[in-house]
Image (cartoon, rainbow, N blue to C red):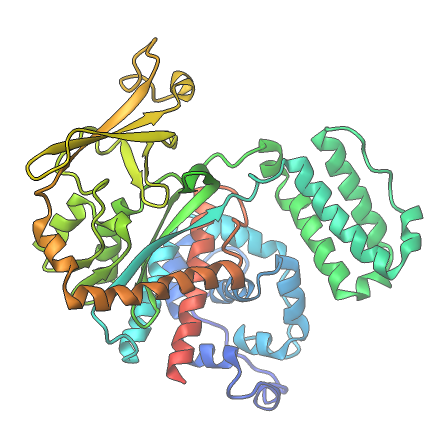
Amino acid sequence: MIQKQQTMMFSPYVALYDIVVPQDNMLRRIKDLIDFSFIYEELKDKYCLDNGRNAIDPIRMFKYLFLKSIHDVSDVDIVERSKYDMSFKYFLDMAPEEAVIDSSSLTKFRKLRIKDMNLLDMLIDKTVEIAIEKEIIKSKSIIVDATHTKARYNQMTPKEILMERSKNLRKTIYKINESMKEKFPVKPNNDVLEDEITYSQELIEVIEKEENLLEYPKVKEHLNLLKETVADDIEQLQSMKDLDAKVGHKAADSSFFGYKTHLAMSEERIITAATITTGEKNDGKELQTLIEKSINAGMDIETVIGDTAYSEKDNIQYSKENGIKLVSKLNPSITQGTRKKEDEFGFNKDAGMYVCKAGHMAVRKARQGKKGVGKNQVDTYYFNVEKCKRCPFREGCYKEGAKSKTYSVSLKSDQHSSQAQFQSSVYFKEKSKERYKIEAKNSELKHRHGYNVAKSSGLISMELQGAMAIFTVNIKRILKLLG
């Protein structure tokens, strides 16, 4: 059962917060800035309002996830810190002497309460609303880009993941007490995942009996990470792969296995919209969605700034129809007048190659035809035919027995003349200089908030991770701009 309003805090020690949590503390400022009751309104239908025992306040549970996103640690460690960090307790609306939640409640909250919510749009819209209300967003431009996130289980096999985490734990302990080697169980010398899981569980049991070791924060951090992997992720470990993740390409000779987050951001560096897709999706195809989401969030858009991936014919036409200036340089490989199967082949601007809907990139290209005014040229892209023979989408795409698979694009020199003219204007050149800001935002997401690697498997989990990370960086940016 969920209570219909938050419980009032009655404690003889509540005045301590005014002493130990300064006015300029980040969490105090966030608490003063945001009314988190919108979380209750969104989640109340997920709970029973009049039957059963009282559930933990959903606003407090959400705040725990927010703290976890800021500090990028395990559930266990974030709950542990809330036992003694008074700024955490103040932010969580807890009395100083109040007991904390069990960390397993956070897993249940993620899986049962917010799994089916459109958390990504809701949290971004809330931060944009605050930024507009505080008159932080004044520009009428958005900058668009995509950043990639590697799947959690792609770089190593599940067994290797466990081996790596148990090794890090042992190395930390050896620096403190090398004699612990004699107490640790014998490592398995085979490739059986179940044996590695059993070894990890035995290792955990041995270490938990050593109370002196548990006093060291670094030991506890590595121990909790191993425990979380074994306890919460056995299902994913045994699945051997992330079923939603796909191969994407950063360049012609560089690929990744995971997801893409497509972002729109104001010139004040507030993210105004996002979509999260599998890794093989084309950047340019998400532009119209990003514009519409930004407008729904409250943005007034006159200009969109992006790289060459966004100068597709459809995007140029959409921008003109909606009175939007598209500051995106033309690329002859993607601004062709006509081409067949546009929905099945997307252009990767980093690699300069087309990618089929199965995620396979062309291995080479060749240009044919005479160059000159009024002359039509064709770029032909060649794919690895061996992959085509085994591809699940080969029907209707690959002709059985064919020795090659190509995709051709006609280049017309007289297309997009108005966009080419706009590209040479002073306004275009000045606005193009703003694009670096979103690259810095991508770096912040990855290096400060753990967005370079997925924390769990599946697109739904990636969307949750994205929602919390983007909400966090937006709130931090708002606080910075407020001074």
